[in-house]
Length: 467
Image (tube, rainbow, N blue to C red; front, side, top):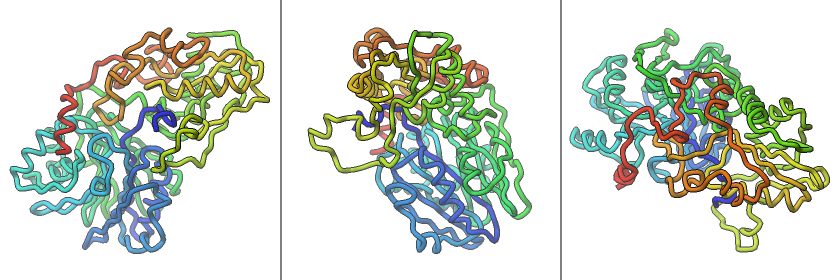
């Protein structure tokens, strides 16, 4: 239901644990629980004990799909987990991860965050090698490429795969004996390393480390592959890339505010975005509010920089999960109230600055403005932490086609009229880069500029992968 969420949707969250003597399945479960914001369609955990790999996958949220009996069956000293939002491959159980793949000499389980843009071409080649495909996802292409690589040593095997793969891939994978973490040479999707007593954790975000008691060590470097076995953690391959292209939306929306991305606490980046908005687009107002939760830190930053008091004008229902029961027309007309509600006593008669993280289709912004108007707001001035989104993403973000992107088809003034705000302003490219503190040549901003870090194939190739 688009009126409930007009945000960009991310691909996945991954976690890997190597901890002899520990309940690694339980540790992976709580790591995924911390990463649930990255995907809500399916979840899975696989474990290894040196002799065999066991796995359990299901559709739905982490807390809904695993029970004590499931975890008890997942024995071993290595575990990997995955929570999915599909960008390539349909949303059904066969596409749930981790994906198992057995090559001539190697059996592995793999969890993938990202999008491989040459997956169709590679799939055709792998079919010629005799690989059987049971899913429609690009992740199975990655798994088979690694398990069937014509080289045995893992460092050489990964080097071979990196030469063939184009796109975004942050991976955790395991054999019966070892855990590996791999990040593509562009570093599009995040991946970090944490230390446990007697073990190691590799995860999409540092917040997952915190939830299972691991100490943050560092990020996996772009183009790096690390291996964990009985001797500890070590780098087994490092490919030097000519460029880096971390996804800017990790800072804007995807990552939790308590995670460290590109060496910077996300909460601080979002506060800086709000401060930049206040400097670039000031307005006379009585209160600054954020659209919860992702824009809250930015609203605080706008308030501090502008001197306009911060307040909570919107309350989020934090118990709204995904539902497959469609509302009737009366409930559909209520729209965003399912997720948000206004506080009339606090906003009545006030001129509001409303800070939002992004506008994709514009289908959420209109109901939000209407909520505030109906709550008595005298003026609504929308300020957006992201520049106008003009282009689809091909590296793992489920942006619509250009036809559906409101900023690709309307001017800022026209969007302002559509959503019903008094004024509307988007953060500039330069202001966004200043906020995250990362050089322009190290960030992917293709959704704003159309300049993607690698050539991308046509959208039809994604459809061919599902055939």
